Image: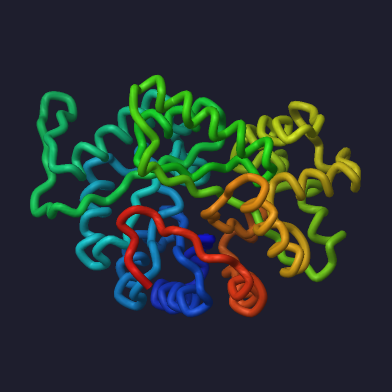
Length: 338
C-alpha cells in the first residue's frame, strides 16, 4: 500500500526539507507540500530543496491553483522540479481554497479547471498552447512527462478528473460505498471523453487525527475549522455528499455542536483515520480489503490556526507502528524504484 503525507511550510524552508527527508526515512512513499503564497514560503522552492535531500520520495504541491499561478508558470515549475528529481514529480492542481482567498479571488470553476488541466498536459507534452492570441510552448523538455493530477472533492470534479487528468486526488473518505460511488463518477467522466482509465492513478485523501484516546480523536466533527466554518465542511461541503453515499444522514449545514457523539464516531469511521495508531492501521487495512484502496495521502486534521503544525506524531507513529504492517502494492506509472 502506498502512503503519502501532507507537510506544511510551518518552519523555515531548510527545516521543512530536512523534515521531508525524515518522512522518507520513516517509509512514506510521497510528500505533498501545501501551496499557500501567504505563508511567505514558496512550495516549489521547498520541493526543489527537498528533492535534493531525498532519493525516492514522490514530491508534489498539495495543491496549486491555476487561479493563483498561470498554467504556463505551473508547467514550467513542474518541469524544473523534474529536472532535479527525474520521475519523482507530480503536478497536482485544485480549484483553490485558502490560496485563492488570500488574493481576493473565488475558487476556479469547473470550466476553468478543465481548460487548465488540458493546457498543462499539452504544455508538458511539448505541444503549443494559445493563451489569448499568443501561442506558447515549453522548451528544454525530455521524453519524460510530468503527470497532472486533479484534486476532486465534489462528484462533478471527480468526473472531470476522469475526463481530462492523468490521475486524481479524491477527497471522498474511505468507506467502501463512498469509494465505489467515486469510482463510478471517475468512470462516467472517462466514458464521456471516450478514454480508458488504464494507467490512470487514484490517490485517496485521508484526514487523520492521531490520539491515544479514541473519544478525543472522534471530536473533530464537533469542531469549527474557523469561525463560521465547520470542520466537517473543510475544504468543501462535498464531504457531506460522500458521507451520505456511505449511509449517513446529515443536514446541509451541520452545526458542530449539534453533532452527537454517536454520529461523530460514524463520521470519523467513514471519512478517515481517527484514534490511536493501531486503530488507524486497522482502518487502512480495512479500506484496502473492502474498497480496494491502494494509495492514500494522509492529511492531518487541523483547524485554520493549526494548519502549519508539522506532523511529527504522525511520522513517528507511521515509522514505528503502521508502515511495518502494511502490504506493498504496485507503484504509480513512472515512479522511481526504491
